Image (cartoon, rainbow, N blue to C red):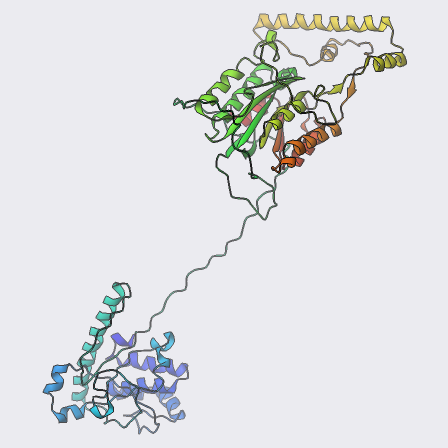
Length: 575
């Protein structure tokens, strides 16, 4: 910067060349004049600069006669008020006169202000009215010749340096005080010295381009199990439990909605808890866990009793992780039997969460006490009649989901043994007509009963041998499994009821959502399924898997996952 190198002829020449590059002959001439004062020999080497100035109609004093009528800026020494009094009129007349250029105001912008130091001396002539010491724009006038001799240059340089250093110190103090501008009246002086802020360069801030990462769209997941939230110990600090007639806050927002890969909904309402349901990750404020309690969940290919214990413990652990402001319930279903942990949703206090594990403990733990009625759990009833299936004939997961929707939940998590037979019984007239069409006789009825007894006797014998070895008894879902293992060919079976189709089941849930949610301007709940199959089943050929996917997709983009046998259950639970 020239402010710190006012005696450096190389720095002055550099500034003259900068203005030459900017095509600013007036500015270039000013710095060339200063360079001529400091060292005419050095400037004489700048032939290109001098030639360019000549081409612009300007000549530098000291190298030739200055022919352009441009104001010349020269270095001035600072003068204090006291020194003015002491100087004689001859000495004052010998000082060089510096006039302000008409384009000084244009030089005040950021680019030109950084071009170098500008030293200005105000005219002290009382006739011009500038005795108040304020810088004024004046018409260019003739100035005495600049200092020429070495002695005069030696006197001018120290004075100019002192002025520049003093002003630089004051400028630094002003910056440290937070750019506070202090305005104070100045005493009339014969000379005023001004300096333009030195040229500075500022690095441009680095700009980084951020590419948004698309979020994966929620889809039904069927494949190898992923790692899930594991059960955790229940806190030893118990919060006081309470019973409230109210079922908790009404859900008025959608916590998780699949809006596409280009948009995500970051807002999470207060009380929302994250849930990792055997690898399905979701969230909710009012959640219900539905557990299949039928014999299908206890078959040998699924892992028997040990596998079912893992299921119960994992769900108890999931509930243990719920936030205090989350409401929950647990529902067990077995055919048309339905039992709930509570008749309404409960807040996830430490006391309520601790009771869940105790409530689940006796379920399907002993061979002689399988199912809900065997352990004398109260059976819940549905309150609403919804088409197309009467509530009297709803069973399994369909009955449990409808009960959960009556509780006004916003997220349902179901673990099921899969698609089960669900039928409407025939009327006596319909049954008699069908038996007549089949030509069913008393002999057929006796053969059927004997076949069932034969299979039951074979199963009892096998379970007795298991107990003797300390192995859990075998649980079957129907007598056909035993007949296959026996190699027995059963007789023809009597007619059953009228099967409820998959389409009718899907319409049942759709109509339940319309009744309990959409008619009340509430967002749809989310329904998620985990289908627990045996290790001998092919997960790619799970019966009516598309049926569960249809229900989940229509219920706010729920998810479906298949777990194959005890090994998959252990893997997903970390047990």
